[in-house]
Image 1 (cartoon, helix red, strand yellow):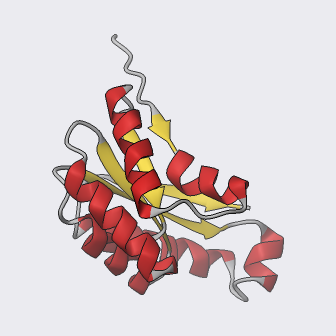
Image 2 (cartoon, helix red, strand yellow):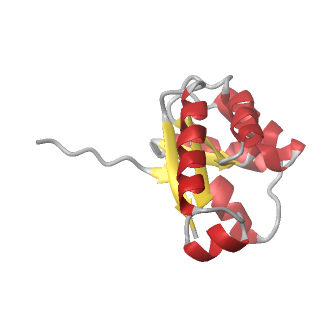
Length: 142
């Protein structure tokens, strides 16, 4: 059985948060091009619903990158999924990465929901994302 390692880089999304500063659209594109040259398989480049600037950066990177899959983050919220797909649709290949809180504390306090409702919402949102692409990633947040 052969095994494949897929390099998934979050420098442009999670890494930018760690900086506690915003990168310019030009800086983000330069980093994305460097990641592509390094052979990164998938790059998570932003959270398009968070701001018009992030949407534009994701769209520009999606339009430019040809040899890596471009990914955008989206909460399990219809608008997030739809906006991510809108930003990414110019890409040759793209992924939507959606997430929801799953710890008992977050389900009760942050979402004011039940585990069954969270599971139902997660399944619905993954299906919604699949309307835009076959490449959907789901994560539990805590």
